[in-house]
Image (cartoon, rainbow, N blue to C red; front, side):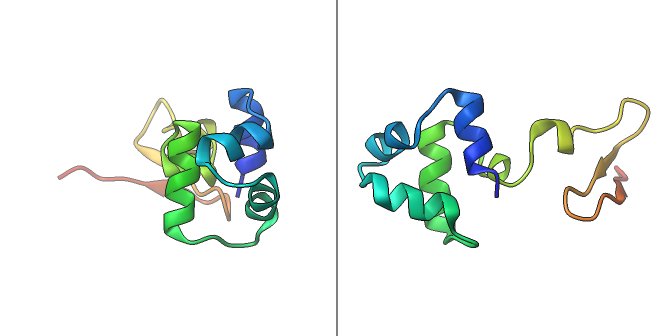
Length: 86
């Protein structure tokens, strides 16, 4: 997850996120360092940061289609994913 990166991109501190979510700083520190979080928690973090939930996993640059085709690059394995519109 890239919660720390999104915080930095948005100019948020962990304390600001804690205040926005109405939770303690220690709770946010646990969330940021966790290997996995519930969908509900991820939704709350995304809402507090005003970003779509998928941005907690991949940057917009990682999922932006290439200009010459409708394909994406998987942020996990790096393989190209081609999309077909029918």
